[in-house]
View (cartoon, one colour):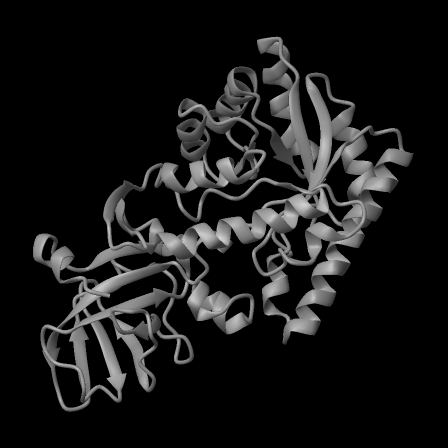
Length: 366
C-alpha cells in the first residue's frame, strides 16, 4: 500500500483503520447474529467513533453497550438508542447521571447488589421514573457480578425496590480468551451461555419477568451468544480485532483492521527505533511474549523475526532481524489491545480499499 501521500501530509505515528476489513468484520458478526435470531448490542469502547458505531447500527445492531457516562451521553446526543451502561453506577455523580440517562434516553443500567441499586431507587423515586436494570452475573471472570447461586436472592431484592424494573441479566465472559485452544474456548463459551440461560430460568421461576439474557466478549462471540436461552451478545473488539485476539485464536491477522503507522528514526546493529512508543500504542504492559504488537510492513504483511520489544513514551524498540530496515522506512504495528490503543488517540485515518483516505474523530475518551 502506498502511504507516501499520507505521510507527506501528516507526521507519523498515525492511527489507521482499514475500512475494507472493518466492514467485513461488522458484516460477518452481524450476519451470524441475525441468522441465529440473537440481538447484537456491540460495545462502543473499542472504537469510540461515530463512523464505526453508525456502520454497526446500519448493519443491524439493536444499540450499543457503553462503559462510561461520557460514552452514554455522546451516543445519546448523536441520536443512538438501545444504550446499555454496563458499569456499576456507584457514587452520587454517577447515580444522578444514571437516573437522567434512564429518564431522558431510556438507557438500561446494571447492578450486582442492593447496595448499588438502593441509591438508584431513591433517586428514581424523587425523579418519578422507573429505571430498567440488568443484574450482573459473574460467569467466571471474577470481576463484578453475583454468583449463579446468589442471583435469585440478589435479583429479587433489587426487583423489590421501588423505581427499579429488572429487565434481564448480563455477564462478561472475558475469561474465555484465556482458554487454551479453539475447542476449549468454544466449550467454555457455550457453557457460559448455557449457565446464563439457567440463571434466567431460576429468576423467572422466582417471579422475576426478565426478557434479556446478555453475554459479551469477543473471544466468546462465536459460541456464548448462541446457547439456547441467550437473547443478546455484546462483543466489542471484533470490529478491529488486535494482536491479542490473533494470539488467542479468535481471528487471523488479515482480519485485523487497526494499526499504528510508524517511521524508523534510528538504526543500530541490534535494534531500530521507531517514532511510536507507549503514547501511540496503549497503557497495556509490554511482555517478553507480546511486546507492543505485531510488526508489519506497509501492506500489513508481518515482518517475521522482528519483535517490538519495548517502548518509551515517544520511541519504540524493534529487535531481532532488523538489518533490512533503514531510517525513513515505514512499519505498521497491529496493537496488542485495540480498545486501549484507540483511547490514546483523538482521531484516526480511515483507509478505503480504493486508496481514498478520510479522518474520523475518536470521542468520549474519558
